[in-house]
Amino acid sequence: MKQDIVLIGLNHKTAEVEVRERFALSGVQEIERRLVGGPVREALVLSTCNRVEILVVGEPDAEEKALATWAETCDASPDDLRSHVYIHRDLEAVSHVFSVAASLDSMVVGEPQILGQLKDSYRAAVETGSARVVINRLLHKSFFAAKRVRNETQVASSAVSISYAAVELAKKIFGELKGKRAMLIGAGEMAELAAQHMLRSGVEHITVVNRTLARAEELAARFQGAPAPIEDLYDMLPQADIVVTSTGSPTAVVTAKEMRPVLKKRRNSPMFFIDIAVPRDVDPDVNMLDNVYLYDIDDLKEVVEENMASRREEADRAREIIEQETTIFADWLRSLDLHPTIRDLMESGEDLALRELSKTLRRLGPKSEEEREALETLVLSVARKLYHEPVRFLKRRAMEEGAAERFIDLARRMFNLDDEEPPEDAHADRKRHGQDTGHTKSGNCE
Image 1 (tube, rainbow, N blue to C red):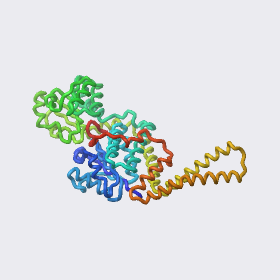
Image 2: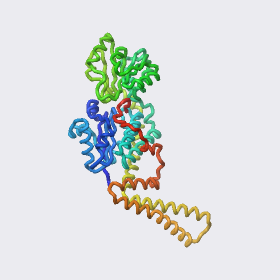
Image 3: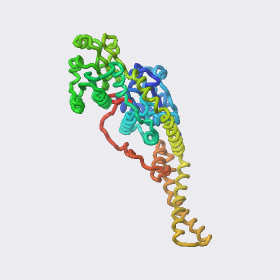
Image 4: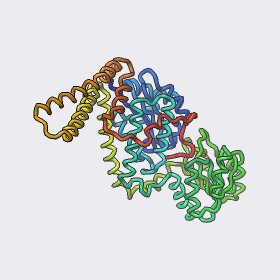
């Protein structure tokens, strides 16, 4: 019954932005459908600007299938991909997922965006049908671990976002942003955060350029800026001193060729581009042009490191929580065998019977030892008979291929054998969104 848990990934720590954009994944639900089957029983794909990870549960060959599917999607060979990825197995994979959810593995440790991205990916996997017993449990427990870290430590205190780091970098370049004119290309959450930070830093005016004009109008109105459709991008660029890009485009939206006329109109006045998208929105050749300063998401590490220095001790405390939750999850994995569940079920019934007997004896008053033993035998016998049919049912289902884990997990939850309180998002897997959430790059970055 044991299933291997394998997580394969690359992130901002292990791969430069060139590698991350080469192996970025979009249309994740279609990939999950291709993954499930054969040795893979469950799958979840997470793709952000700072990480791409595939989580699979299944037989030992599941790891090879996940690598092959990922490589094929990116027109690469499994050996080529293998040279760039880390692979975590079983409890290492569990601990890693918990750390990602708690934002301990993010470029900006403690930032909240990654938890939302992970929840979106989980919901997509539920819709696809590729998240089942183990991934359902693992992701719900990761959300719980993240909540504990946030409530019991200060690791998220004063945590900045990638957008904040981008604006801080701009301030280092210009000295101050007062009176500068800025442009946002893309209108997602990261663009919104960047707009807030830029206005606080004294930026005079913001233009929002987006493929969906209605969204650009909505965001621009919030910051008293000006909206523009993506078709007007190069007409608007000469007026911008600072450009922050965060679109979901798979190809560059700003190229060196199109930028030359823009610079001519600006009469050599410098322009600052900060590209926090992966794949990148700005062609790297743009940085070769005079009076253009281009930075990508990897250039933000220095700013992020300065912010992290004061929270290292809290991060250590958070990692202790992750270890605790990983141990609890390991116990649950072991309980998915039939015999521990039967034992826990019978013990639960007997404990309940004895507690109720104790209450009754207090009301009845003094009884002889023989009477107490007779009553105890009676209640234990009733409890065992009540649980006899559920145990028979579990034993029958355990003989069916692929059904045992589902029914054992259901029984453990029905009888609360793990003594848990239902999490706030216990029914997230029942939500329906109707769309492939796909690549979560657009407007979002951990």
